Image 1 (spheres, helix red, strand yellow):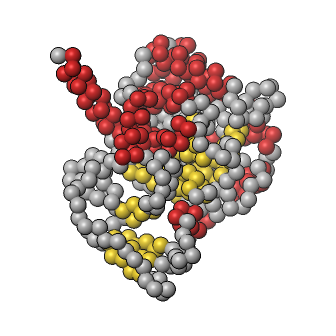
Image 2 (cartoon, rainbow, N blue to C red):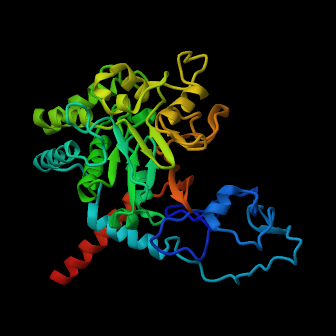
Image 3 (cartoon, helix red, strand yellow):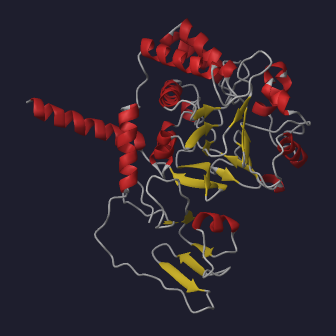
Length: 428
């Protein structure tokens, strides 16, 4: 059962179906069964095959599980002799945190501390300077014709991507992603990398559009992660990663407010470093089985060399970070042919997932797959208050996973408070 960390009644939000043989600390997948929904297990689903490694004894349509809201109903579809189901007796209520997640939280706290307040001015300036030095020496970005890291990020085949869409100053969601599954362990050992598809700043909720403290804490946290996990945490440019006058939301000039806030709190030197960070960012990430950018494929065929030398193609950079799907509101938007040509630029198969953020299709959702009938074209949005979606590789295939957002900042704060109280008692 999936139980929230913070809830008035600890209401169960659904069931997570996963492989019990999966190893702790290893990235795994799961299926989520919501109340009043039905799920069919079996070899009919390629994604289930990759996730659970069904044996020959599992039929194409083997078992259905229906969630009535307070009970699970199972219907055996196996004609070869029936399915054994182990019924667990009701036990004492367990804490909603698994041992692996507790370990992740302890590690997160050691790495980031409270992760609630912005860094002091001098510490923040030293941190961003360290990040900028690392960005200019990035090893996974082919050099442009100036000899500098170009606009393309190439992820090695053996590295598992963890891809998050727009976070928009929602630090809880970033911390939630790092506290679930085997993501943190994989980052620490170097078998995975975190790819943020831009727009991690600027709250999108109506009441906080002009508030910039949360954006500052978010970037402090990302910069910490980038220095702690060099060449394992990457940030792609989004349209909000700018001080530009054209960065607006709900009539609020967030780009200019962001610059003014940093100037007021951290000074001109920090603003210049942040501007340098933005100018140094890659725009496209590609691996053996995925292709990603913030907003859109090019609206005309391009070469890989053009992506690497993106600094020379301002219009192309604008399309990759600002454009949207073609619609009546966006007649110049992209279509299926553009996605097809973009895959061909990197010689990727037609079934390679192309992942963007930037354009959530409604106010509540976090994941949309095969959007506009374009096969393997997905939109992921990771900034909602109630849940986040991400993409990662499970069983050799890049798949989406959806997690409920938990109050991880509050958990870390409680851990800090408990330690402070313990230390105070010892000192007394």
